[in-house]
Image (cartoon, rainbow, N blue to C red):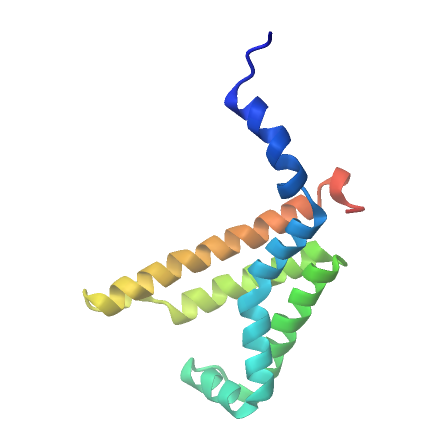
Amino acid sequence: MTNLSIEGRLAPIARPVFGSRALRWLAYLGLCAAYLQGGLVKLSDFQGAIGEMHHFGLAPAPVFAVLVIVLELGASALILVGRLRWLGALALAGFTLLATLLALRFWELPAGQERFMAANSFFEHLGLVGGFLLVAWLDLQPSRAAD
């Protein structure tokens, strides 16, 4: 009798579920959820989107609002549909990194709860950037190109 490692015993059980296309698509949807929600909210409340651009000092605010809406919805669609998924993932990674550096400057806040919350959000957003970079990397692998 062969003594298989824990990985050797668990992987065959997990692979059918966690290797499925359906679960992978749900993972993509989870990664894109905040961008889909953000883009749709900005689209339905364009004045609010302009106000958000003003808040962060982006001018001309209406142009930036349109660009952000198109980026959030368009890049998410690329990822979910699977066409140029790597490009959509890189676009959202770059956008998230820039937005994080602009909006979550925790190092400029005084010590306390607000700084703590901003620091947590900052590093959570870096996790999203990493997730999108992983999506792009996986999508560009030759064995995954047709997936």
